[in-house]
Amino acid sequence: MTPMPRLDRVQLGFFGAFVASTFVSIFAAQAFLVAALLIFAVRLAARQVPPVRTPADGPIVAFVAFTLLSVSFSVDPGASLDHAKKLLLLVVFVLAIDTLALERSRERALTVALLAGLALAGLMVVQFHLLGFDGLHRRPTGFLGHYMSATGLVMTILVVAAARLGFSREALRPRRADMLALAALAAGLFVLAAAKASGLGAVPATGAFVALLAAAGAFVTTTRGPWPGSGTGSTLAAAALPLCGWALLVSRTRNAWLGALAGVAVVALLRKPKALFALAALVAAVFLARPTAVIDRLTVTDASTIDRYYQWQAGVDMIRDRPWFGQGPGMILRTYPTYRWPEAPNTQAPHLHDNALQIAAERGLLCLGAWLSWMAIVLADAWREVRSLLREKPARGPAWVAVGALAGLLALMAAGLFEYNFGDSEVLMFLLLVTALPYALRRGRALFPA
Image (cartoon, rainbow, N blue to C red; front, side, top):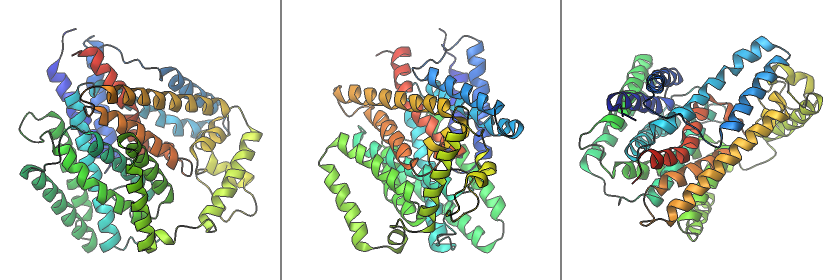
């Protein structure tokens, strides 16, 4: 097949802008996603690239089909169909597999993700310390509309950063250009925070920051210059670990804490099992320091936890009532008052704070089975990639990508026990990118054998 380097590069640039924007603006992210998809469609139509096929295709198709069937049986099919439009985001999975087949493209795109993750975590920390986002009812959201979206992304980036540091082949040697990039990012966040604090020009400042970060994403993925270098990703990962960790702590978001611990524990176990002792020591140090943001959340008697219990009970009742096709996509908020237990503290519930329960109640047990099969297949394939790459010599090659995918997916699944993060568009887009990484590694070997 004849390669099309110019179109490849344009697609990669749009994809880099998409990755960067995912952390700061859903509108910009989806605009760049559409642009990248159009280029990919042109390349497919010209038969310049082979179709993308994976073992997960069957469950994904079944998930879509059962979701659409659920729409037809919904209590409000029109509203459910509008909600089901989020299925279009599944194209991220196919696009990422093709775009990230080359090792250089993967490295650059994940470097962009680390840079954008730093921006999001940095603004969350600034919001907590300087802008009054320091209470349970006013938590830092970064650039996004909800703290759950922000913490879901920051949690995943923290795990990816841990994998990069633990398994990357480059030594951690920050270069001057890397430090200048971090300084520029910090300066941009300072200007943005000042604009938000004063109330003068906050919207234009945010728009300018988003535009610059998207441009940086396109530049980093496509440039052939000396920066970013081979160690830039490791430098950004080293900066992301403490900053993302601090952002998660002050967010008071327990499901993200659980996911981060699960993901980092997987990285530590694969790298060196004794590293789990260091992770345990770090957790113990946090307990000894007794930060208010943490200690106040270590309870199961608060209203939020109690409400989750009763939401899950209502979810079980919903499944019993309509087991096969559920209440309909987007219908939980509307039908919850009918199934709400009298003891539940809140009268409304937009979702049921659990991925599996939400999908079963909303779309039915058949759709849940497809989703569980999908997740099982991608986790198994990620594990196969990890095991295969760690056996290679040198063992510390691109294995960090597979480890990051496996640990990131497990982190999202662990957090999803107490939050419907699969339904969060920003988190879903990055989840699909992470899910695609093992298959991108395989596609790269198939198209560009050594």
